[in-house]
Image (cartoon, rainbow, N blue to C red; front, side, top):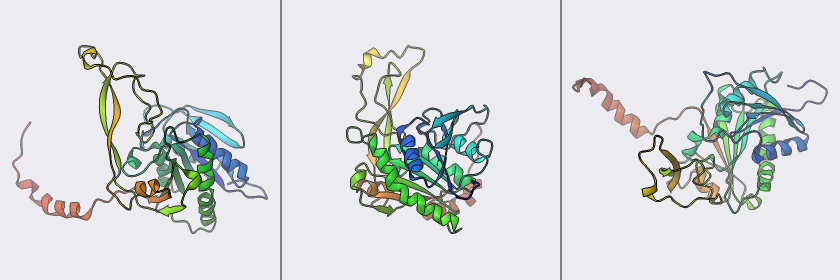
Length: 307
């Protein structure tokens, strides 16, 4: 915490799109301009989308100080979880921040995509360390969204951030969960906040053979396809030699599954800012548990097969 007569709570920002991403820079700009917080930044030095909760174990991290107006900032060679972890360790900053905010991500993080998300992992790592945290994502849609929408998204979430810090100051903020927040595409005409649960929505992915790394559309960190990205024409199958030493394949969206009427994705598409409490544990449905209660005791009766 900061010493001095005027106490300001400390907010550390991280993300998975990289420290130069417009979402992070917009969020930091809004936090700094409010003059309410001591703003810290500790984020990956390059894009680390969809790396989930991957951590660096075998290699040392490279950390470089970065000039961001109004903030103390470091770029880290590792993952979002690495960035949060080292940012909380007191080796870069002399104190542990009051709140960690991960984002603003380019693309929503709802449903099963929460598992893939490096943005959510940045907040989850803080939760693992006992520090209150929030992950923020903006439902970017190519052809509709603009970079300025990140500023609107940050401003729309400021009441949540200040309210959390008020609860932290009063020692009334719950420490058994963290928040995942998604902001709708038309943020200027949002309907308000909506407490939701993590649904089961997911984009079904497939693989397409390509002849170069550049071929194919840009994948957002949620693994949805940005329709505004340029795409080369599909290469005819007979031009793709299966005799080459290395075959190249890229993911592509093959469809979507949305089967939760009251899940986070549904309300996000209705124009709400969804606020979803998350934990580190993933309890299975009770019918699955009941099945295995009856199944496990009989496993020893099955014949063992040698390989």
